[in-house]
Length: 382
Image (cartoon, rainbow, N blue to C red; front, side, top):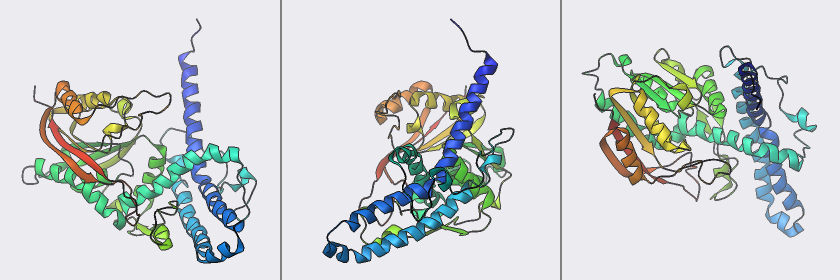
């Protein structure tokens, strides 16, 4: 049985990493093309309807033209996000292999008269949907429109930190180290650091990392940019205007404080291996992202110092559930609590039925809302 030398394995891993990086960049580049295809679909359907029906849809056709203008605005943001990504990571060569482009060249078409082949569309659509999700997450984390969701999801965690580490007893909060795994676009971690704590966010998704890098390092003024987050939701609108509601971002200047704040890229289980390192781990909509949630619980326990706190808020969606070729365990909350205690945590506080939303269009007829769980537990002193 032959084996692959370690050096060759490293080269293979690096090649896969570069390929993945490029695929994510391409998803941002092809965002407009794939989204235009959806608008063109509506236009084509209307064009073959009876003339009388077309006349009754005149106002809607005018909105489709507006959608294209809004798409141009979104596309400008999308390309700003990836403008400097090739220099994001130190000591890693991720030079983009195609000169700055809107992506049309690879499809051999232009935006005004574009047909994406079925094969290419299917190849890109999944990743482009992730780009669309990034735009909605920008609004959730960094716009005034997203403030109600942040109040639901982030404020209980921030309040707990304030209660556990009152400024009267912790005049130098920078000595308290807080980790936020699954940091997304970084707002929760940023808010923790804004309260004086030393905080590091951790994120695995390149889609999120590209966008957070842009917001945290390239946005220097409040409400500097605008995006249309609900442009790609074609159903459950009371009015056509609700589909093209804009949101300005960021609602605050993210560069106000940076010395006690950082973002680390990578797999949570691989990045954080040092034991007794953190005073607090704050997780929001995170623990159900693991194929094996027990691994997350055990790792959080290991990296906390004795007396350290784990604050969690979120549902149990279990993202890997029923995903082909993936393992997944999905313990309900009561069993999850037993596991948390069995690992060694002391449960300090629990609350169920916490109403939370995630990147929801506030104007939509359809609202997804979670009855999330909120708990605080402590790693006991030896």
